[in-house]
Structure formats: C-alpha cells, structure tokens
Amino acid sequence: METVVGGNGASTDTELFARAFNYVIGTKFRIVSGYPGQAQIVLAMERGEIQGTANWSWSDIEKQHLDWLRDKKLRILLQLDLKKGASPYLHDVPLAMDLARNEGQREVFRILMSMKALGRPFFIAPNVPRDRSDALRNAFMETMKDPEFLEDARRTVGPVGPVSGSDMQKIVAEMYAMPGEVIAKVRQAVRVAGVK
Image: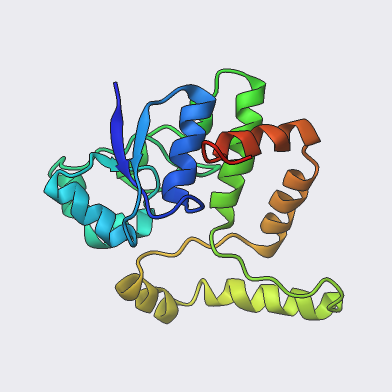
C-alpha cells in the first residue's frame, strides 16, 4: 500500500529517508516534492494533501504538536536514531534498525541513522591543541546541563539532547571505517531516480 509523504528537496532528509526506506526494506513511500519546509509539509498533512513525512524532528513534534500525539491524530512509525527516545510516546516505536532483515540492511541503516544521531554538529580544526579541544567540549557539555539554558531552549526550540564530542568522534570513526561496498549501498539507497 502506497503512503504519500511530503518532501522539500531531493537532498533533504524528508526525501532522502523516504527513498532509502523504499530501496532498503521495500516501503512504498510516494514523495510529493516542492514544499518549502517542514512547516508547509505539516500544513499539507493537516489539509489531507499528504499522509505524512519521512523525517520530522521529535523536538518540533513535542513543542508544537504534542496534542496530535495525545489525541492520536499522529502516528509515529519509526525513530530515525541509533537509540530510542526517552519520551513515553516513543517507548513502543521501533528504531529503523529494528526493521533491517539482514546485516547488509543494518549497515546501511547504521550509516544513515548515524547522520541523524549527529544532529547539528559543531567542529573545530583537527590541529587544535588537545587541552583547548577538551576545554571546548567540556564547556559545551556543561552548557547543555545549565538549567537556565535548558529552560530557554525548551521554550524556543524544544528539549535538547546533545551528543558528547567523544561520542560524535566515535560515530564518525565508525562511519569512516565502513567498507566501500557498504558506502556504495548507502549511495544507491538515497540516489534520486535517473541520477547516476
């Protein structure tokens, strides 16, 4: 059965993940492209133009549409992450990795979900002295624990769930260590039809 999802560009997560799921596990997402952003995709869902989206940040749902979850107007089918979210609304929602039927599919999802786990990363140059990079990492993580900062973030963008610098470094190292044939599978999974 086909599910119509909104997209906002061939290289965006709303379309990339729909194509990847179709390719890897055989879903039947039909992408309606051309929406300027996630807000317009959500509006199209409300109007009944489309049935859903293949990528929507939990913080946005939690901040702006928690009533949809509470009133069962929204059904979350999958979590796009390496680990399950903490919200009670997500406890029974499987990870994309849970749908993989073999190791090849798990490897493709591991790379794609690693992208999601990184979120919006901050980087510094590789030659920054270790004591400075450690100081920046520590300051960042301390900020992520500051009650005033967290309250301001909750009001403006929703809850924050940072990944530590060392965890990010581990995720990136694991992705770079993947064999070339796995990377080729990922490229094929997200490829736009007709583009080589």
